[in-house]
Length: 173
Image: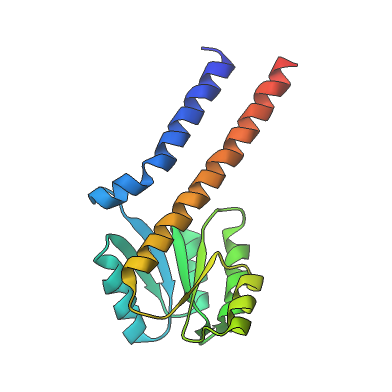
């Protein structure tokens, strides 16, 4: 088997896994793993139940420090972070989460009861992937999470493909 054939097969496998994420989630045979960083027990419950009913596995952390510990020992597909935590504001939390994640393509969505333009702008400047006003629109939130995770996985697959292509080009020259 040539390096080129091995690269083609690796790309087919990676491409197939990215495209099948949506159908797997909808069929119930796989679940998104989402870390919710929220200190309000009522919102912890609402988000966990609302997303759980849509096949999303929600792990809850009530502070940034606990969330950073969770990220260091487990994998998560996406992170939901409140804009006000007991040990950090959500904007600082996003920067710390991005540092902890390093290059891992994990979408971060800020949840906030304040949806004014200044708060939304500040959230995106801090590095969030999306902003979601706190509401009971669980279908909308679950679809956004699914879309963000699929996009992140597709980007990671594209980056891997480019690196593999560069290696094959180097070998051919």
